[in-house]
Image (cartoon, rainbow, N blue to C red; front, side, top):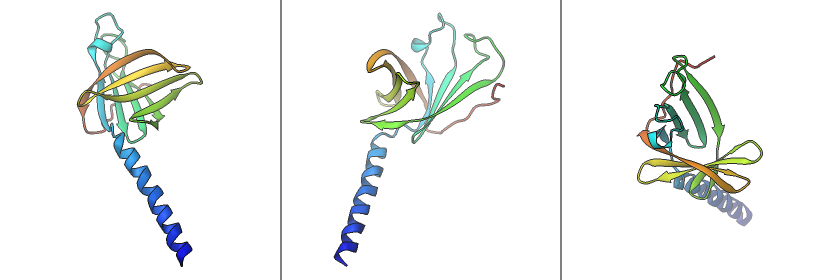
Amino acid sequence: MKKTIMLFSLLLAFSCEDKDEAAAVNLDGTYKLSMESSECDGELDVIYITIDGLAISNWDYDGDDCDNGDDCYFAESFTATIDGDALSVPNGPTVTMVMARNGTNGLKVSYSYVGGIIGSEIWDYESSEIKTYSPICN
């Protein structure tokens, strides 16, 4: 009986620990790339990031002033891991994208190459909703 109680206590402790850690990194919502972080010579580049737990989606509108393409969104999805008070997303074997809170609601996305920061972007808070965009480009 003691073994059963001890096992149950350990399971309970580990399950609570995971929930607390995930709650501490709650960045859920929809964010829009700030104009100051747009690399399009002053042209509007409409890109959204949605975060739902560890699921990250990137929505890049092809019909904006920057891309001057079709009326559709290029969509990519990633799975993040928890990295302290941030979310980390590997982008190939040597580049990592780290997302952390910027101010009250904004998001700062830093890119590192083999551990050294190579750039960052500021994303403005758009909504607590996890939005989706359409139509999706072929």
